[in-house]
Length: 201
Image 1 (cartoon, helix red, strand yellow):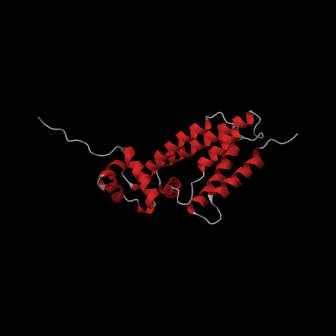
Image 2 (spheres, helix red, strand yellow):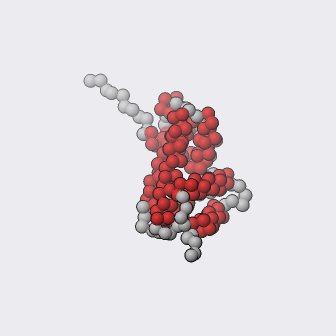
Image 3 (tube, helix red, strand yellow):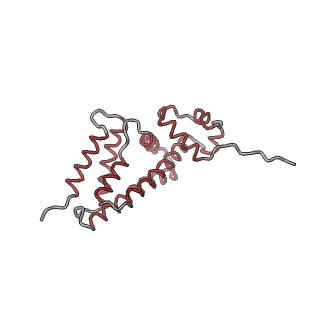
């Protein structure tokens, strides 16, 4: 009887989780195909067979990480709390945990290399951003319709708020002096108070 050769490669999700763990523990500069291969018991050639390039590995890892954040975001946004409490939770989830936050480290690397990305990679990056934007627009629209927020255009306000969050988040992720997470969250909440609180008649 012929024995079928067993496929001993770990599931792809395990490889992506290992990549994220390596970024968290050692930094992105230490994530090489050879090092990742050793961590998951695969050759670098085998990894390249699955992912074709390091850029593709990084984008897949970002998509995997975003999937987990998306599930957490959905859980937060479907709570029965007031819209403002859920907006604060959205901001809290968006802003990095601190200097060298692994998700933001990966996000910045993927976007930095996007100038050379093909159309498929650009579309996948846009899908990541689009999910955050759509959820924010829906939350703002809900708050406006219920009179909890000022009558702003949800799409325009979401675009501007996310630009603010991106700028502040990059400062936190790179450890820019004077831009720690707590200070940034205070700035954003003050901006939301000023911009969304209904005006007194």
